Image 1 (spheres, rainbow, N blue to C red):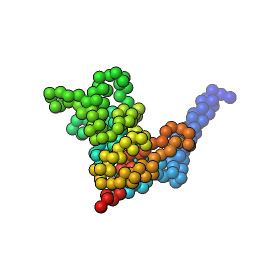
Image 2 (image 1 turned 60 degrees about the horizontal axis):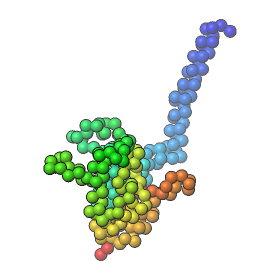
Image 3 (image 1 turned 30 degrees about the vertical axis):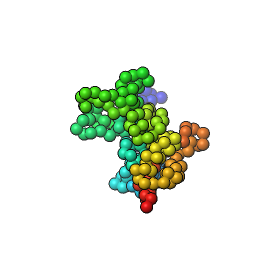
Image 4 (image 1 turned 180 degrees about the vertical axis):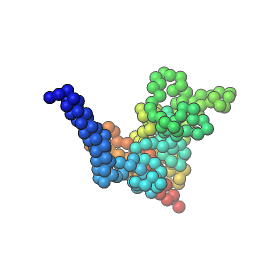
Length: 220
């Protein structure tokens, strides 16, 4: 067998493998995803009714990516180092809106910057003062839990613990004039169990919970 024939065979094998792995396989996976798992393949989008949708125009968010909720009318999300990859277009120095940055702050428990964010920091200059998460929760009568004070590793976690959700029941019930039992039931309905029953911990999807909350009618 000549050297040129060996080269020709190698080139043909490379081209065949390239077509299979770079074109055929990806398109087959896309087709299977769109046919068998359209919701998951399109980002697990959620509509305003709380139902899953494949239409981006109907979506208000994803079940996989958290959103910042800080109003007393809603169950609050856990803090995020990137504000869940949202930013003020006029103050987006880190380019969050362009890159969709995610990740932890990697601050040590003793780091002053972390302590200031949690406990707050007063300063004669209002622009340098920091409203801490802990004083905000205490003022609202919410018993702080770890996930209401510390950020997640991705900064995009859509879940809080059931304990964190239940700690906010009194505040939300008072603000919306709802019965506390209604909110407990709502939390249970929107709690995701452990994966396969053994991996991870139960978590409450904050977006789904708040969409369901908006559907409740206040007490007369």
